[in-house]
Image (cartoon, rainbow, N blue to C red):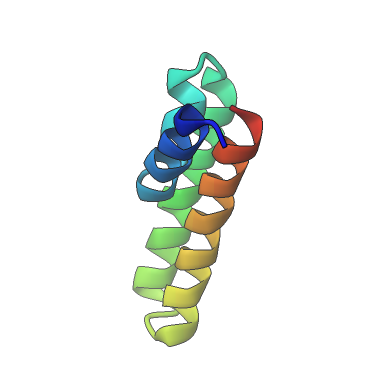
Length: 71
């Protein structure tokens, strides 16, 4: 296991798109970050329950896995 991949996965789990942006894939990083912001706004105003929290967590896990897998 590459420690950089693990580090990038953790960074993208905390802030979706951060690792992609730092690794030069700026467009993908901005899209992932924008989608995370949109999901958080929708959950905050419309689905403010455990389902919404689970949806946010799944998205953060996806972003972290994507960074881990690709870098």
